[in-house]
Image (tube, rainbow, N blue to C red):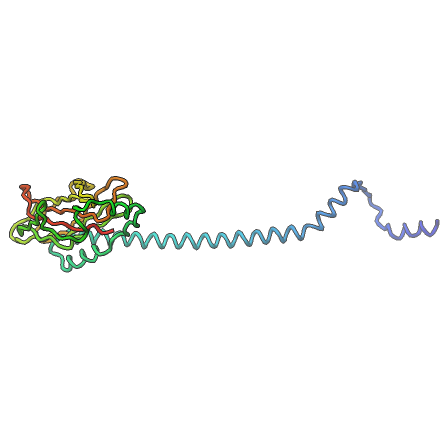
Length: 251
């Protein structure tokens, strides 16, 4: 007993007040488990912070790339607008060459439809075949020389559309040539359909030297263009036919 009292005296040199707290056993073990898991929690938070930082850097790179692409597209659009303004002028050097190169960049043709072969097989014998030239009795070829027509292209586009492009050249530079371009679609079964362009006045022209005319017409649904042709007519301002020819529709 005396030994214990001496030990307590040695260990308890501070004569200040003492406080004691009681903690339940469940809470004590929970607190110990929390401190034991604290390094793992810190590691998970650090890994998540690193991942968020990487994603933020990637997003910033994408934003910078999109801004650069936007500036490039805006500059390209401005150059194309300037080019369009120049192409409207007749006295610009190299204008015809640029127009021909632009015309060569055609849109993708429609894929062959499943019912096209059957439509071609059921066509009557008197139908005009693909590639047959002008000069038919019903539609004779006409060329009065009022305007020179060249580089005619008729091509089917996706979405039930038909694109017609041609070069119009004025043969008399002393005066303006004005008129309109019209087209009639002839299908393999011999049926004819007057084409309506969008907008309606896209076929009108008024040129002093040269113009590249591009017209798009919307076709009815399920219309087969196998062995189809167009009858192209150029009328003067007084509605006289100055040019007529027939061309195959490319697909």
